[in-house]
Image: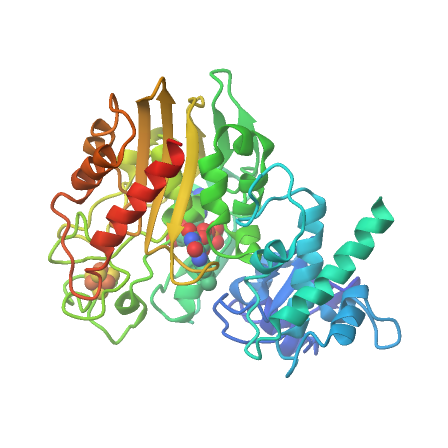
Length: 169
Length: 321
Ligand SMILES: Cc1cc2nc3c(=O)[nH]c(=O)nc-3n(C[C@H](O)[C@H](O)[C@H](O)COP(=O)(O)OP(=O)(O)OC[C@H]3O[C@@H](n4cnc5c(N)ncnc54)[C@H](O)[C@@H]3O)c2cc1C
Ligand code: SF4
């Protein structure tokens, strides 16, 4: 099977049962995405597929042969961090760090959804939401943090969202 | 997970004739396959079929492709403007990641979250017909209070289908022989009865291709979901309501309920208790009496009966304000 991950082409021969998460972790050495619950409940495995955030544990690799897949490894490098990665460092948006790759991939996808004008359960008006902290919490509720670093995660995302709102203005 | 054959369908016809289990977003089916609650021998991947658009019809209604993801449906400006209850129900379900994958067809057909259904060591008539129902006499906090049978007390866990039931959606299908049919959502699901493993009227190979929403009606929309945490949890009870008040009188009401039955529940007696009356707690209590007539708790879910009454009254106060 052929896959495009973080802009690179990969060939892999895998069992049809292999999830997209296991493909990356077990077969391609991309261990940044984490396996928490393996049932779509914790969000540690979040990746971007064709720009949309999804739970990579609840989808089969074989179903994604024609897609553009981005994992945490594709967002930044240690020398050149993605703005959300450096914001998580600045705001201490973690303790153990296990959920962090999923949190960051999810936040990238989430901010893009906000740009597209997508509402959330926290939006009083479905036609135009402003990204307050309640909105960030609701939109990020698919990512569980057992260390409960939530306030700092929200602060990190808030900083990046506010900065990009300024650039757009 | 048991192994399976995999085929990607390139047309609706090919999918219906492939003789396997459809997989769309996979967010429910793969979850259950990992636990071997589901063990299909063949998966037919329908995710690339051309069924992912939302079209306006001449009669003013919308036709939603079965593969439209839950996120896109919730954010569609036409849905927000005219079917707000549907957007609200979708946004109250699952998480951002799951809604990006979950499809309209898959959401309708998602299976119960009954703990014993998930536990292959437990007796469960739905998973294994004839093996009993451990939820009766067991932990049944999330279980049904209406329309149950002595064989199964599971609920349909979905939010989107509850809104669709209030909106009188029609489910459009295509069978292996090419026949198409349009099934009103009220006729689509089955009560558990003696065959809780048969959950709807679909035949083998029959594919949901679209869901039609009738032309919108006037009225205020509300979806209220009560759950164990404020986000990312299934409903203990939910209300989808579209209600019109004119000159101080309720002139139209469509209400459907989640978390209480094997299917998204609707009872004309609830609406009859409201229409023609002035909004008041007395009227709302009469509607709750109609909803809960014959409701039965099974121990740990007894709380759902007063919860349903209070939530319905609070919802009606809000929507008739
Ligand atoms: C952690 C978690 C939390 C969740 N919370 C909620 C919640 O709060 N509210 C809620 O409503 N849902 C919730 N869900 C469930 C989610 O909404 C469903 O998993 C999803 O809608 C299923 O859609 P899918 O496309 O992924 O279906 P799949 O898993 O692909 O398929 C589900 C079933 O439908 C069949 N099928 C799919 N498409 C068709 C078709 N077109 N025609 C015929 N058969 C078809 C499949 O064969 C399968 O039996 C949650 C799920 C998870 C994992
Ligand atoms: S309630 Fe239904 S799904 Fe749950 S154990 Fe009983 S038969 Fe199975």
